[in-house]
Every structure is written in C-alpha cells, then in structure tokens.
Length: 114
Length: 112
Image (cartoon, rainbow over all chains, first blue to last red; front, side, top):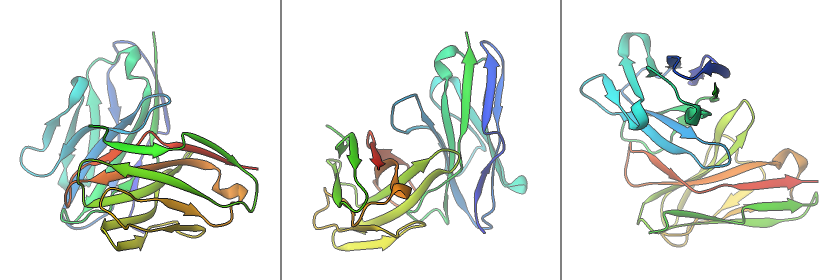
C-alpha cells in the first residue's frame, strides 16, 4: 500500500541537541512534500514544503529538510532544538503534484527537556 | 481574515446520536477536506471536496456524510455516533492543486 512512514514515534532531546526526524514515502511518481507541526493543543501548521528545485529546503524557526529522491526520503532537521520545539511533527505527501489529497505519516512526538 | 473556522471545539455525544461538525473558510479555496486524528495513526482522510457540489470519499468514510453547497462551507455529519468515532476532527482547505493545507482548530469529539 502506498504510504508515508515516520520512523520515530517519540523523541526526547535536551535543549541545544540536534534533531533529525525521518520520513519515507512509497509513491513512485512525482510528489510534493511537506512537514507540518502541531504544538500542544493547537492545529497543524506548515513548517516547510518541497515542490521542485534545490532539494534542501528551509522552513520557519530554523528547520530544514532534505529531499533525497533515490531514497524516497524527506528528513527534517534542526541543528539546535529549543524547549519551544516540543510538538508533534507530521510528514505529508501529495502524489503527482497536481492532486489535492494529502497523505500524512503517523507523526513524531518531540519532547525537548529544558 | 479568520482562515478555517471549526465549531464546536468540544462535543460529547451518546451512542446513536447524530450531529454536524461545521467548517467554514474565508480564503476562497476550492479544495476542502475532513481528517480525523487518532494517537499513533496520524491524520486520516474522511471526505474531501474539490469544489461546490463535488465531494468524494477518503480513507475512512464510513459513518460520515458531507455536502458542499457553497465554496465556503463543508459540514461533516455523523449519522449515528459510535464510540469508535471518538477522535479529534480537523477541517482543512487548500488553495490549489499540490499546495499546502490550512487547518482549523479542531473538534474534540467523545462518544459515550
């Protein structure tokens, strides 16, 4: 089945640690890729997106993600996390770029210790 | 500019009751969708609409109905609530094909 896989369900880090959250998708064609963040008690917000061009994309709050087509991956990174980054992070895919349906991964809960 | 507005924020239903979750957007987006969020399962698509008068089923449509009479509104109806429908429901809208979704604040529904 076509899917979006996030490798870590829960991650606990100390402030200033580096973060990398894995995301793989199984669609064979062209895709648009997204990372969304959900802070406690809030709705999902866009963190960053990749449509085409430079495979290293930068988003808000110091986050970045790298699209590696050969690995069907779109991993999220941040060099130094803060307590305020505590949230749930969702990788998402729209296949064939011209579609509407967004398919989400199961999410990764990040807890940053102060 | 309110974005995507969902009501109510919280709701408790008894098994067998029906209700409608409201969703409205003021961004003139053509595409709207409903997701449910359950722990460890991410967001699963219930129903979606690509424009007024056009709706289609997502991954988990059973037990839910939708309609899209206007561009702005996309209500979700629970026909006969079941405990398995206890979840957080999010409405989202998208401006165009392949672009990011804008989400409402969510409705936390408990069915007892």
